[in-house]
Length: 94
Image (cartoon, rainbow, N blue to C red; front, top):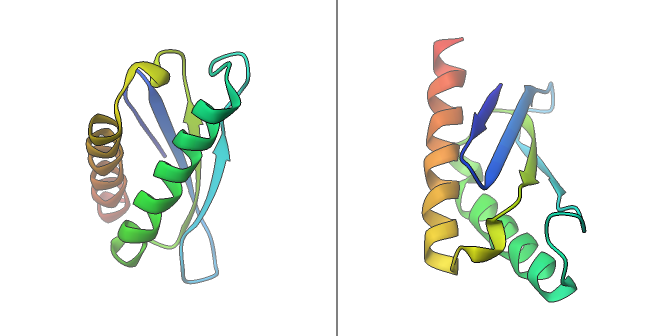
């Protein structure tokens, strides 16, 4: 399953573990500075930690795209919340 915005894509695949897991891909090509990559990783992990109890048992990969560094923290958090909601809806439909 795929849920994406212009700055972030979240891919998901069902797992047999009974709980969700997360992986992060933030390329130097898209996010040049290490402190920006760390900020994005920290925000994504925190957002996942808060959402994981309502997410389906899936393995998720969060991919940061060009332009993600222009987002401030609240905007990035809102985008992630919207993408997690989309994944919950897609999981219920399938």
